[in-house]
Amino acid sequence: MGKVYLFEHPLIQHKLSILRDKNTNVKDFRELVREISMLMAYEVTRDLPLEDVEIETPICKTTVKRLQGEDLGIIPVLRAGLGMVDGMLELVPSAKVGHIGLYRDPETKLPVEYYCKLPTDVEKRRLIIVDPMLATGGSSNAAISLLKEHGGKDISLMCLIAAPEGVKAVMEAHPDVDIYIAAQDECLNEHAYIVPGLGDAGDRIFGTK
Ligand code: PRP
Ligand code: URA
Figure 1: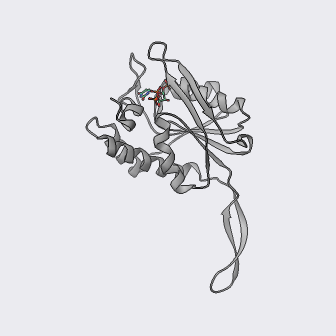
Figure 2: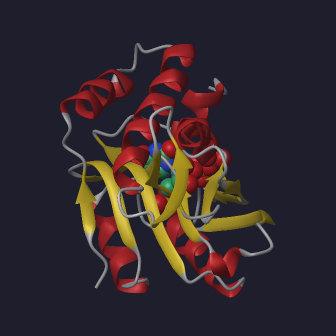
Figure 3: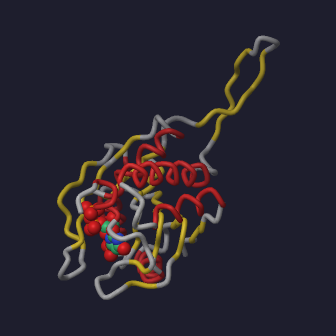
């Protein structure tokens, strides 16, 4: 069964509190999503493999640890997931980035796929799907299934805010996937929005409402 990691670090929680505030403007919202993603990436990449490398300091020769190759793939779910990419790339600039376009049909609440472009060597990479919101879990489950159809094997999911319903749905559909979140909220409302949540993440990142 996949694990759920909840990041309770005070810096993440502080920034998340500002993100939730309806008076936070687009510029600050975008910046906070980037910063929280960077802080979360620090933890999510905790077990990246290292290799020994010989170097010479000004004093002597020595063996040091370096990251083993370029084995990470960051997969934002469009649109809102795009806001999380830059923060992660600041820590792992050599990661490749794949894009999955999904939107949630307002009537059915089901995800509709409209784009998919992934790194060619997706089967060799550690893949981290990024999307600020895990609500019903439909979009995350669709993104995970798509990655698996393209050969993805090592997949995890990183979200800012999750509803219990979404966490349960992903754990049931994809028990091999670990989930990283900054908060688990109370529930979904009748429009399948997370309560208290932060509203529509895509609209708040791109200023479209
Ligand atoms: C939001 C969010 C997730 C999805 C979560 O995207 O970014 O992708 O909803 O909901 P779910 O867990 O119930 O599937 P949205 O469909 O609003 O698209 P957007 O990012 O383009 O605005
Ligand atoms: N998508 C969002 O952007 N926000 C929610 O609360 C649920 C789905």
